[in-house]
Image (cartoon, rainbow, N blue to C red):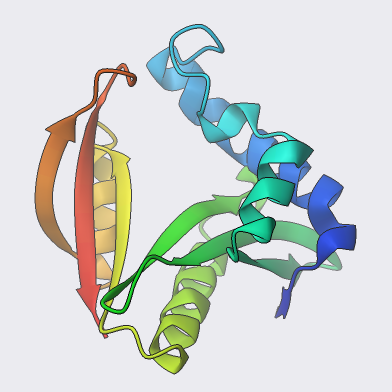
Length: 159
């Protein structure tokens, strides 16, 4: 397993990894372009390009001789980095790749001097909330947003 920094040449790969990895979540929760146009299952190359232009860093995990996951890290201020777009293709799940990507995000956030790493996830995806809790994240709160058809649970990890 190898995790590397992603560059502009990786934008098509990243968009594909994210779309494919989040497709099952979109199907499970009935998320569509109409009711949730910003869901990662709809990720476009333009989204990745715009994120990179804002300074969001992407990392690609290569395992079993192919790219099979990624994660993004956004420095949101002096106090926090956001873990975003954690994606592992379905055939490669439950092999430690997601945890390796989270640990990479932790390492990079720590190196950037951020005291906290935070994430927002679908509250009803309890197995994912529990998974992050096992990695040491604590629930920080929940919120409904007018533009989202689900409640978001915010979780935080002290670096």
